[in-house]
Image (cartoon, rainbow, N blue to C red; front, side, top):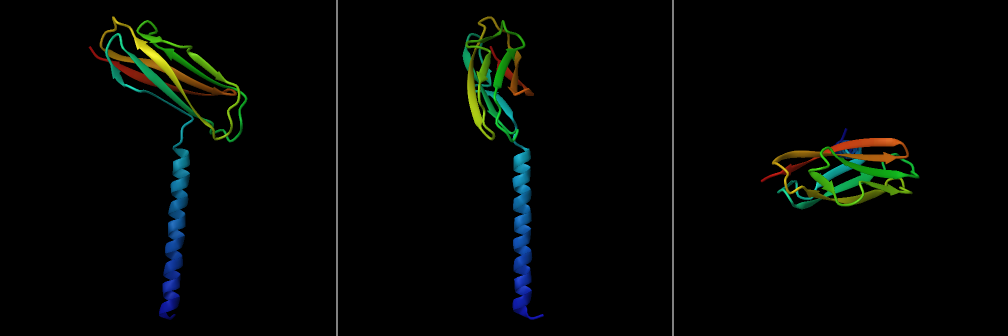
Length: 139
């Protein structure tokens, strides 16, 4: 085997390895996607203040859905007060589509310091995913 043939084989082997690793990266990136993400814009607040719960939902079902329902339920609704409706309905949600919905939340003025939770549910034509989100109240 002469030197140019050996260099071609090394080049092809290197290119093949690059393609394999690129494919693995795409697969792992896709698997790490989540249908439902939720977080507070300010993860720590004081009593009497307002914050926003941001909910991001992505249709990863591989098909369009006719109904997306987002529902937010504070575990302690007298401390974490929803300033808008706790449920949002979207009548069409395309495959791969992404939506962000903000839910304003007020912390009761007499809240004690601690961690408070909300349950977020996304229902895509009966396929449900839940996430618990925490808000730290300081002061």
